[in-house]
Image (cartoon, rainbow, N blue to C red; front, top):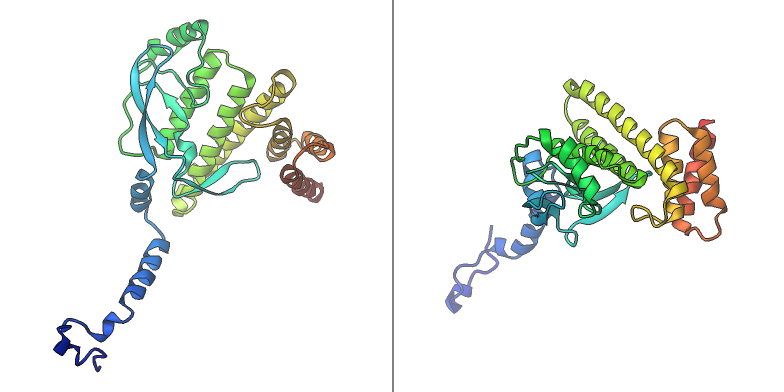
Length: 284
């Protein structure tokens, strides 16, 4: 093939050839292909590391200073949400990093609740959790789903022991259910040998959502809003969706109708309630 740059060597440009014309464009195209290829689990973990940092905490139960892995919130990108409001982020499941666990005494809670412990609650944690707690720190630079599920189960256990509010127990159950779903979705990309584990995770997710529904239903009539970062109408929709997912259609219809008849509910939530109403009608 003729060299388009032939003759320029007389001007001191003797290193060019025809391939250089669209060299940068080819590089960009190759980069796009590389970025869009199906990543291996090792590549996904390596990419996830870019969004994680070690945040310092002081345990409100035993005063131990430690670090827990957190997500750099400004770097992650929300790309969608499930109907029950589970957020979906690109490159990293931020839900895995929401439970903080003290490695010394075993006290654990979701990030928003971690620092709020009364003296009687701290004593209950020490007597019922710390006395028998043994811990081996997670290996690796990220938390996998097993790490995250264990940490959230510890958070739920501590919330029960300290007699936390219904909303806190419910929210912890909800996030635990979402993590079971996340792990299940990951395993479903594998081979058929994982069917039993996938089925088990589906059952565990449903149990978590059942408890979340019961807890939020109790909290709705007893606690003030905002609740777990949600206003009253968002909570009503969440109750409706959880009721639908766990086989309580009458409750789902009740809370769905409350959203649809609320004058001050925002249109986004009303649209979700309309979609849910259609699903309930089709299932009837």
